[in-house]
Every structure is written in structure tokens, then in C-alpha cells.
Length: 99
Image (tube, rainbow, N blue to C red; front, side, top):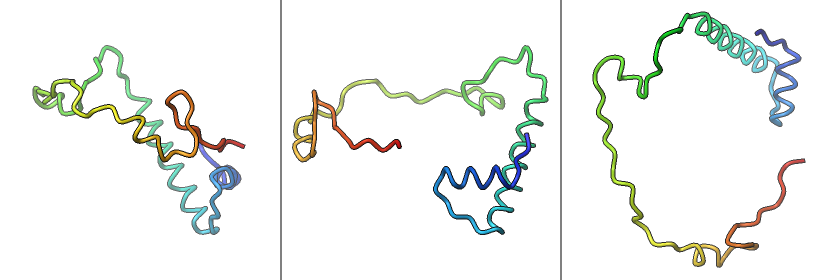
């Protein structure tokens, strides 16, 4: 996949960014380099290779240090929501942000 200058302009517009021409060209180069790297990685045959739970597991046995899953803080929902401008059924209500 290769992007064009018009793709960068559209992405910048959607992200509400104002890019100078030099910034736009640099962004185009960086994104195309990224996509080239992704294509190289996709070309590697990984059939029959089990996924790793942790990347260092390929080098040595990894023992994860997990803590016991238990509640350590009291429920303070009502106290935290006292200052909220709008709450409904225990949830914060926020203004719609999608146009």
C-alpha cells in the first residue's frame, strides 16, 4: 500500500491538522516507509509457529509475576459522581462529540 499527497491531506483534514508542505512530505515518506515494513513482515511465512504470550519467551522461560485479583479500594461511585454535571443510573453523562 502506498499513500499519495492527497491521502495525507485527507488524513490531516480528518484529524483537524494543519500541515506545512514540508511536514506533509515528511509524513508521506514516514507512512509509506511504515507500510513497506508491514508488507515485509506480512511476507514472512509463519505457518506452524505458535504465538508467544510474551516476546521474551522466545529467548528464555518467562515467569509472569501476577498478583492476586482482589478488591483493594472501596466503592466510591456516589462520592465521585456528586460533582458531575449529569449522572444517570450510576453513569456519567457527557455531551455528544461525534459530528
